[in-house]
Length: 78
Image (cartoon, rainbow, N blue to C red; front, side, top):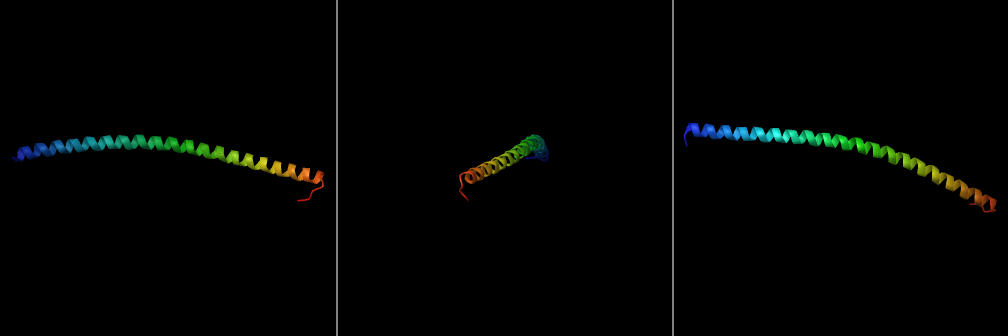
């Protein structure tokens, strides 16, 4: 294999690697955008779950008070 053939082969490999790196970079950028979009959705879901937990806590408190009131009216002490 001559020097020119080696240089040609090396140039081809370099171009192929450059193209591969460019493709990987585009994939990473797309993945980053998708992850950022998912992070926003997760943040929104966390906020909704927090709201639900607060609501369920309030409902549980109402149920406890109602049960205590009924027990009081029926003459039962807990």
